[in-house]
Image 1 (cartoon, each protein chain N blue to C red):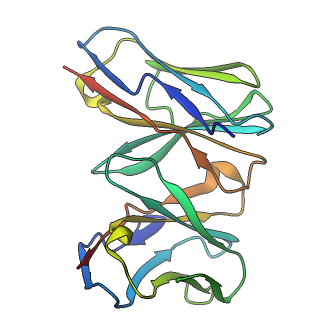
Image 2: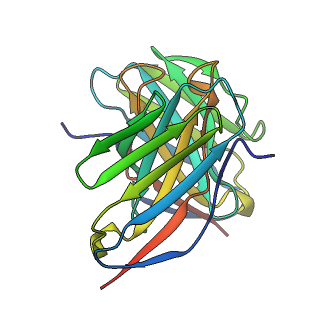
Length: 112
Length: 113
């Protein structure tokens, strides 16, 4: 079982819709969770971090964490074509920086 | 803030040649990471340094790979000899502390023929 699992997609949504990206992880002791956005040919950039159960909102982005279900998600409201990218879920386990695992990413396409 | 700087951006080399990738982390960041990204395996941690000291190199594929951080502003990842299966994008990332979010460089796309 992989440490972090994501649906590879592609996920296509129309412009203005809500895009929902999901991630599950295996280490129940994980404490820190991150969402990175990676445009084609570019490097990953951090867009959200979440550390406690519940929702965290930042502009059009909302991260949701449920540690009991070992599940973290990212919602993008009012999706724009510029949101088209691969979204990487990253989970930091208990033992430190060498225990930061990335999912393989979900490719999102927002259709104008 | 110039961000994490990697060089070269692209490297094409023949099997058996030595390859050296370079990284300058963000000033003041204490932790530096080398990752490899492929379509099949995604982002994999190769090695990370904290305060210039290698902490965990268990992700280094084999003895052909080595990494150094001689000072707080410079790190290298060397592959000798290179093989076609080493073809990937290699990212360097830095963070203020070991468990802080990472700031990635632009990556080096390595092609070994």
